[in-house]
Image 1 (cartoon, rainbow, N blue to C red):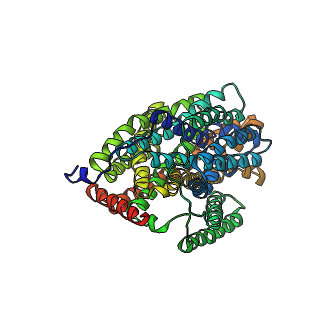
Image 2: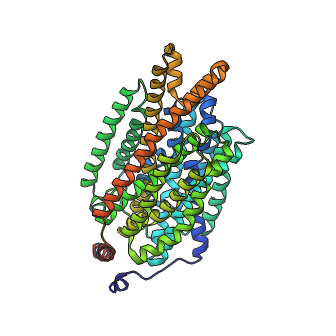
Image 3: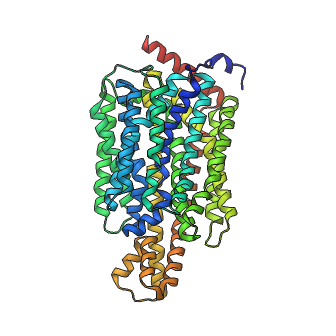
Length: 528
């Protein structure tokens, strides 16, 4: 640290009963993080139960983060204006019925809708947690609180797989969606008892029209990405893409002219803010994408049980928690830029291990190695991404910062998971078609389409035709692995691109401290 750093850094401050307040906020965030990943282990069972396509499975997995990402900016602004604690409590209350609907969904369409609504419920609560941390803590105390918030959130995503896998050893697929209900009740009680009301909130009007544009744009974008690789869905993808472009263009046009914008473009143009937003989007997006594909690889290719597949990702959770305290110390000593790049290096190595060492005959060692590297990478890079966002905005705009930080996880998760899922879908279908063509087999169109739909469809076909089961399953496994390798390579490329952005555009430690001090002075003068 340079000698000038202490003079420009903010003294630490924290609320009364800070331990209980932080436990309450992290418990609320954990409900959302658990729900983000709880479906992944159950996807093979869901696919078999509903005879779902790979695109439908992608939407089940991404539906929750889609609902959260689409609404988080608007609902975060509502919390800033009408009460963050009120939005937090409403989110926990509405989480319970959406979990019950998902657990007993009668069709794949209802299940996707329930996941989407669950994401909206989380959108009420999740942005509030980081906004309140920003408003209640300052200085190094805020950095440590964000580190713990980020690490527990990431670890909860990994632990969700273990809990869901354990449940599936004796219960039906829908039971995984019931995991969040009791945690939501506990979080609700803690929030009522310990989270303070009306902290540094604003009386600015809420830009409802801008909120509508943001919701339509994000939802249309993610749906277009998911439908793009599906046979016969090119029209849907094209329409979704056009709607996304028009809605997002209208959103940014509106934000330039609205008297009280939902997303302050002047604040967002600050270099620390937007570079951190892009960096975090890639960090958390790759985590969700890796978990999504990794769980299916473990079960479909390696033949792991749901419990073993869930337990396999626990090293990621453990190393996230171990790396988070180190991340907070690194931010203080070498800055956010260096900390992000170190984390990115571990994430790149994780995808490299998946690409090169995850094969049809892999033992557990390369699986564990990839998840350990992923955990360290997320633990190191998650904190500076969120910390830089909250530190570069005025406190009354905490909802905007927390909404953007949540978008890192949710929009990043939606987009990266959708992109990697689309690549997996395309790669799987291409590999199946290639194997059928190479075999010279004369299959009718219906059988071919069934084989190309998803691994679950191929497994169901094998079960119905036991005389060909061995050949069908072997071909589906090899095709899934081929598609997964495409996705791992894309994940590695995204990490490299993110690292280039951070290395070239994020300020050095000394410059970062100076910029944050300047932003703080500008905001104080603007509010005076």
